[in-house]
Length: 346
Image 1: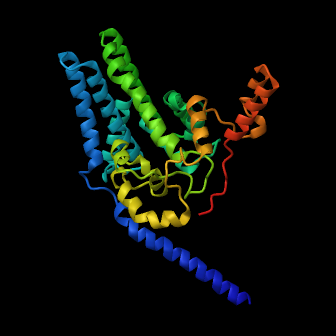
Image 2: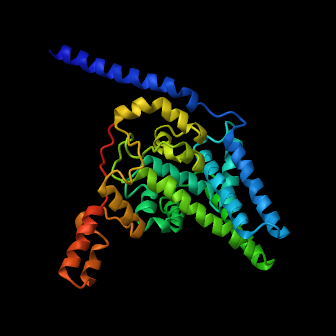
């Protein structure tokens, strides 16, 4: 009897290993390093060219301000994908060039590449963990339209958790020093208007875009820590172009070395596997009344408790004038609480 059970367990293990090997083979061409000349390199160069064109046209005074702001936004939006792929070593097969692209994109975005890299990798290790996933705080600690300023939490998280390695603290100092030097030069030489209009303003817009499409939408309702269900896919050719593949975010979480321009074909190849695993493959906003109400709550308030009876928003009930309003407020906090499922079984 024991031998029979042992053989059955061995067969199950072998079957699982065969399945993993099969899917590894199916996806291998997407997992391999990208070619030296690839779309991410084009984004990196194109972003800097657009930024240069925008500044040149500012001083030429020919193009209207909305056009210049739009171009500056597009420039930074492109570099957002570059820094993301570079932190996963998927921007270029040569690691020195990959690093240079990451730092270059970070400078244009006003980020720090070591901070972005280390904090983002923590997110991958602890998806939807309220204590250890830095992006969970960004997504669930205020209204969606104010998501951009919450990215400053990443810098705090980086230093609080002492995430730097080797020369990364020095790199952070150089990049932050360069940022401060540009601001000081802007004040001294009177080009702060360029910085406000063509850098800070578009960067704020990009922060909202990244926050919504990289952090908020892919991980809501923020309840699962299982690798097959902790993020989602919402297939769309248009969205694939506009947000450069982030609508296939679960594909990125499952196989982080796949570059952004191969998310869509990798998803199409792996779709039977995702179907079998029950992976969410819709945006998840309007699927039910509960989804819609939760989305509306996130747009207007967005602060979510992780313990129904100990919500940080619960004391507000004391200031409401009637018992009915107090009960409705507490009921709302209960319905919108985020209590992740810590089961991470494959």
